[in-house]
Image 1 (cartoon, rainbow, N blue to C red):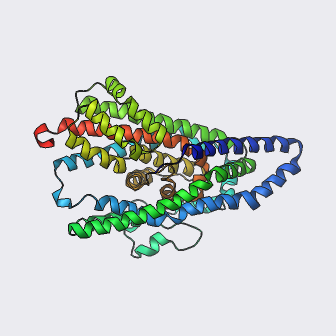
Image 2 (cartoon, helix red, strand yellow; image 1 turned 60 degrees about the vertical axis):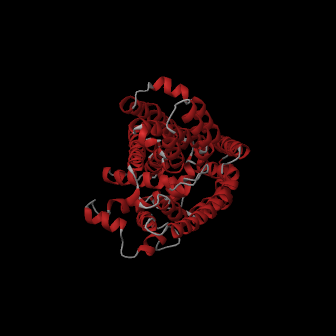
Length: 436
C-alpha cells in the first residue's frame, strides 16, 4: 500500500501554503500587531485542535501497531532452532546494517545539532505551544536514575506490564520499551507452536496490523489540511526561527542517508564481495529510482528481484530469501530517520539525551523500524512512542510532518539499496552448492 502521488503533492503544497501564510501574517503583524494577536488566538482555538485530531489518530494505534507488527515479524521466522546459516548470516547483516545507519544519523544530529538553533525564548514558546511545561520535562530528565543493569531491567520488565505501556494518565503515552520486549517474547514463543497454529496466530497479528495501518491511512488523508494548520500555528506563535532549524534537520538527514547508502554499503561491497561500488550502483540505478518514486519497499520488490537475477546474477535461492525478508525487516533508512527525529525534537524542546540514552535509542530505533507499516508515514506512530519513552512531548512530531514525505522518498531509497547490497554480500559469502 502506498500513498498516491496526488496526496503527496497536496501535503507538500500544504506545507508551502502554511509557511507562506504564516510569514505573511508575521509581516502584517509588524505593522498591525492586533492582526497577529488575532491570528495567534485563532490558531490556538481552531488550528491547534484540528492538528490534534490528526496527531491523536496516530497516537491511538501506537500500542496495537507496535505489538502486532513486531510480534508478526518474529513469528514469521518459523522455528528458531531450525534457522540455517543463510538465515543467521542474513539477520546478522540486517542488524549490523540498521545499527550502523542509526549511529550515522545520531552522529550527524549531534554534529549539526539542528534543534539547538532555536533561541531559548523560542524553545519555551514551543513547549507552551504543545501544552507541556519545559521545566517539568527537563526536570524529569535530570531526576531519572543513572543507567545500570538494574535500571535496564526495570525499564524493559516492569512489574505491571500493561500499566506501563497503557500509561497512568490520559494526556501522555505509556512506555514503549516493555511493549517491544513483550512483543518479541510473544513472537518467539509463537515460533514454537505447530505450523498450523503458528500460521493462524500470525494471520491474526497480520490482520490487526492491517487494521491499524488502515487507521494510519485515515489519518494521512487529513495530512494535506493538518500539516499547513500546524506549521502555520507554530510559525505564527514562535517565529521564523523554526524554519532555519527545520532546514538544518533536513540537510542533516539527507547527508546521513547518503553517507550510509553510498559510504557504508560501498565499504561492504569492497570488504565482502569482489564488486566495484561505482559500477555496482550504476547497475542498480533503475532500482533506486523506482524506490525513490514509489516510496515503498514492497512496490520495489519486483524490480529488486529482477535486477538481482538479470544484472547482478545472484543465486535465486539467496535473492528469493533475502530480498522479500529485507523488504519488511531491513529498514536501515527508516531506523536512521527515527533516531534523527527523536534527537532533533528532543533538542528543539530543550531535552538533552545522554550517551547511554542515545545507545538505548539506537536499539529501539532498530527494533521499531522492523515494525514500521509499509506505507509512507507509517513510522510516525512509532516515533511518537519513542519520543514519549525519552520524556519528549510526542506532539513534537508535528515539527517534521511537512518534510516527512520528502525524507520518506529518500529513506525508502536507502532501505531498498541496503536490501540489494545485503543480498549481494550474503550471496558472495554463501557457497553456490548450498545456496541453490
